[in-house]
Length: 229
Image (tube, rainbow, N blue to C red; front, side, top):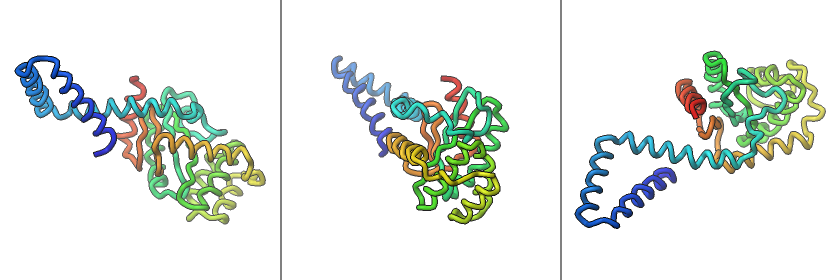
């Protein structure tokens, strides 16, 4: 049982407990009604769990650094002025992040008002950290899309593939180890921990935190929900 289910059970239990203020007969009748309703419409539980999760996650998102939706340099895709931001935490060594590339491309193609902000979360290997520093450097130099594509198409992440991608994108890596880059990576790691994110890819869309390589339809539903808030 996850923490959201536990919270929902606690809420239902509290509601049923509150019925103790009435007569035994009345309480039993109301309990029976609640049970019949939940059995007949189990989707109510799913909706309630999602609403509860969104509320609790929304608090965590609000507590996290508000700049999460603001890209470093030009590390974004889609409409820079879009009305919904999709924040992706990614690692260049993550195969699921690689698999999500065409899904993200399809999302921004289908929705002209979505913007995707990319945040490095180097957690899989030491080379992930080197790639994140190079990626941030590329973004600060306005060459992030070219570097991003070149590194993903350059084979396994290594010092050589990072250097090759930087050369192809025209990125000067002399300041890749800057304090600004290290601070940004540390901030991303801290925000991820606050949000309960421990893997890549992970997404922040509105007040929801989603994990894993998601199908286009699920990302679109999350965008629609954020737009409708």
